[in-house]
Figure 1 (cartoon, rainbow, N blue to C red):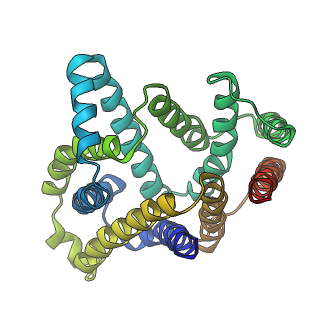
Figure 2 (figure 1 turned 90 degrees about the vertical axis):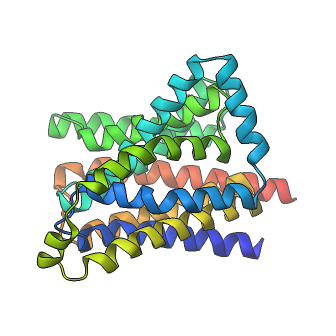
Length: 291
């Protein structure tokens, strides 16, 4: 348990720090950063696949795809969605959208709970139901007060939820499939990296070579730490600890100079209240399971 907690905290800290770290990568664009990130991540993903002896699962999924070719389209969709979410995470802090993306990550767990209830007919507690209600009221108030809901928040809250729901529905929700997704992104990222003139970038940012290496290192260590934590911790506790990353993202958004408009206060308050309800429900269930 202790090793799992430490790995989860390390993963949250590194993923949170990555939100700030991207601001150091100028003049690289979000697509440039994504290319380098995937370039370094694929070896780490393959290493973890071997470490946990998931090669057999990978072969099983490839056999399924051969027997049901439409599943290839599912994997391509999920790979594209995952790549888009990674790009958005790297793009937002340098383009004034860090707060909006953070709101999306606050919204995501609530959308997932709603998907579980209405798409997968899962039973949810009254605390989860109340959390969904709080989030719904908060989003409605935000639309009434601001006249819109930012596309960045919706892209994360709904887009990532579709990604996870698709993986669950088609029973492709494991490390082996994630390896396939990263592998599909790899050729495109190699192409994007090949278009980057790091020598020219170094004239504006002399540390760019070191920073690109650190981007890959941080991403890889964070991924490995999260996978280790997911194998050592109960899923409820892992989900609760994941909220630390979202809280870190909000503080980093404010630290790099972004502000929260007064009209958005009800949205943040409502989503925060909903998140606290989910956390309380998770702790309650965890305590009940240990009793």
